[in-house]
Image 1 (cartoon, helix red, strand yellow):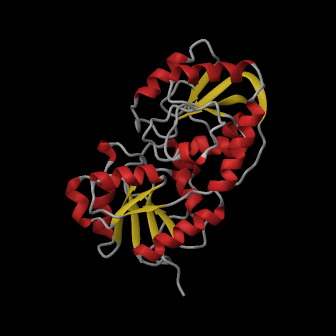
Image 2 (cartoon, one colour; image 1 turned 135 degrees about the vertical axis):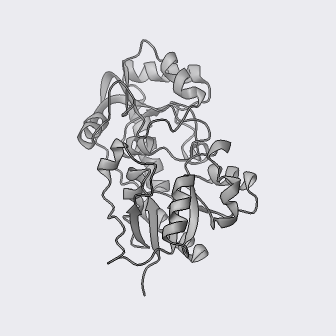
Length: 294
């Protein structure tokens, strides 16, 4: 029996690499636009859909109007699904495409709920990206860092307030639109192995947090505000996350100055990855998706 065939627009290459690991579907990427100049695209390992050897996709994952229009033109019989990376109104499926969409895909239950509240007739499908726990992290003083993979994707107050609050604490923001520049795979591996912690500036309505989950999986303490489903899934003992940004600043300084308490955060983050971001859970959510959409 052939596997369900999915093509995803190239917009979040790191995420696509994770989803493609599952044997529950035939997963390919395709350049549908809106990715030109994206340095993260150099890290894509997913094969590009080839009409000569790959089956016609039964579903296509899109996350911009340009993706939607091109996918409809290229594969008129495929089911188009809008990928929700966060729950903000401006990133909901535009009303003009609602009739032609088969639903929305999200990576947190919170974002699915926000999408459903905005488009009550639109079904949503939850997928859980998987990470392998790999505790390589060692504490180092005064070395807090953050990462924005794709430029211009957010604009929440935390992105401006968090760096201001930790002024005086040694921290570096990486990204192709940041002064420190794009962090290659080798650079990220080095940062994950030796730092004070990862500083998250994700907004409250963010759905997932790829860099944050890489940090959790490496055992790196993550400091920032709550986002997505973490409040329900992460231990309440995780003291470095708070909606009070002054507490975030205090936790940042504490992590930079001393390893006291950092090992506890490392352990709790790894426990969370094992409990909620396993390959088995990802495969379960993909099977449910295929069962419902297919």
